[in-house]
Image 1 (tube, rainbow, N blue to C red):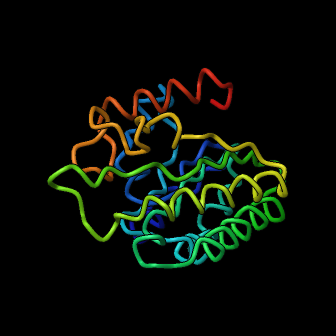
Image 2 (cartoon, helix red, strand yellow; image 1 turned 90 degrees about the horizontal axis):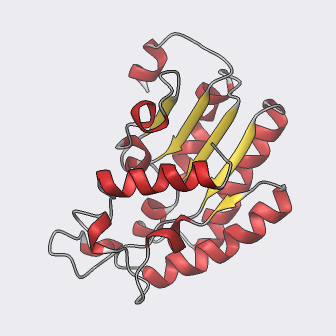
Image 3 (cartoon, rainbow, N blue to C red; image 1 turned 180 degrees about the horizontal axis):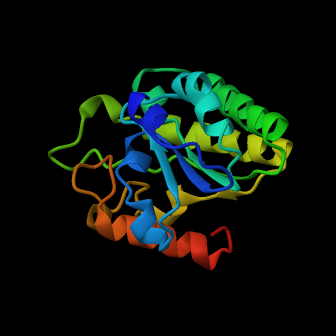
Length: 188
């Protein structure tokens, strides 16, 4: 947050908001837009986004791509609470920065078969349950939802090995697939 506060306050830009999966993306390079703002923080949860949302809202972004929830699941926060917090995040953006277009992205699958996988995240059923609730939240808040889970999962519902190095985070190839999907679907 101190690093974010030290950056110049620039308005009207695209913001990627979330946890380490967002933080690790080189969004400027991936999008070809040097003004894109990365607001991913490793380990962050929905409660954290709610607490730090003012810093994003002060920038009156043109667009916010939101991906959050896997760390909540890792901390055994119930899917209904996660979905409710995401609804609160969307509501605040809509209220305090009404010109901002929001793109909600659902929670990626994980792959517990990979050796480096952090075992406390082996909660695929909670990801599925939360993502079902997020479909309802997106509909209720009238925001589009990008199905990243479907984009990256294999036939067993796991994160495809070719897109990850630890079963939780995606690799460079995964980020390229992600950004191409956002472009292809017209969200970027």
